[in-house]
Amino acid sequence: MAKIRVSYEYSEAEDKSIRLGLFLIACGILSLFILGFCWLSPTLQSLQSKPANCTVVSVLRPEEMFECVFTCGADCKGTSLYPCLQIFVNNSESNSVALLHFDEQQLVLNPKCSYVPPCERDNQKNKDNVLLWEDYFTKEVSSQSFTCFFNQQRRPDDVLWQRSHDTSVLLHCVLWPMVSLLLGTLIVLLTVCARSLAVRAEALQKRKCSYEVCQDLSITTSDRRGNKPGDLLATNSDPELSSPSRTLPLFEVPVRRRDREH
Image 1 (cartoon, rainbow, N blue to C red):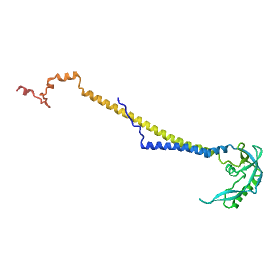
Image 2: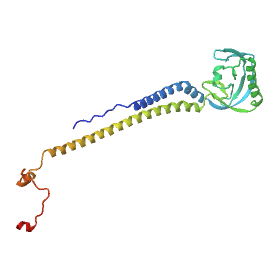
Image 3: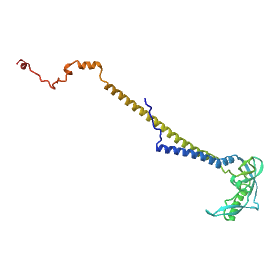
Image 4: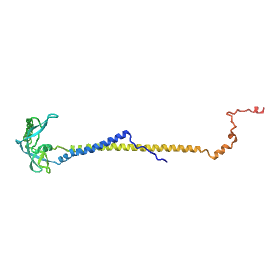
């Protein structure tokens, strides 16, 4: 029996779906690396800070001024000045005095000050923003205990008012790349499986058709080989039927008895 050949080539729609799946897989892997380096590592470092109870010890405003960069348009930039605010708190974890910072970004931006205001073009506006925080910690928080975040290994002399990143950032950094990766893999697998099933169905259909054709050919061949020897003898035993000159009437006319006597 000849071997049945089936085409394994993908159609245009199947080819596009496989390309889409591979694109989603590549985007998932690439975004996992990018988000891992840009967001995941700082988030893990931020989550290493342990919560602690802090109380305000002193609030100082030195005479030193610091520069900040403001923007006033697409190609407009400039520098302005803001006063430094220093808030010292007592940390319950280490039982020592530490400098309070608003968050990790401001700690990196200016490790000497507790608060860096949004940079404005007017120096007076920057000073007013700093004075608002000074009044808040001097009048409202001075006698109260609040939650701060402390990292003994990285910065034992600094505490944070709040974290820059939380667990939601960690969730998004892992969730969306994995969704893209799994979705692309699912599209590719479904397309390949669908094509494989189509090829098997086509192969079964060709086998069925070839079997029916072979069966018809065998029946036709047996008919062409002729009848059995017994049938041939039975046909040739009657000379009247076998004689070509003998013709049978289509209709036999009945003859009455009287006509026969005459």
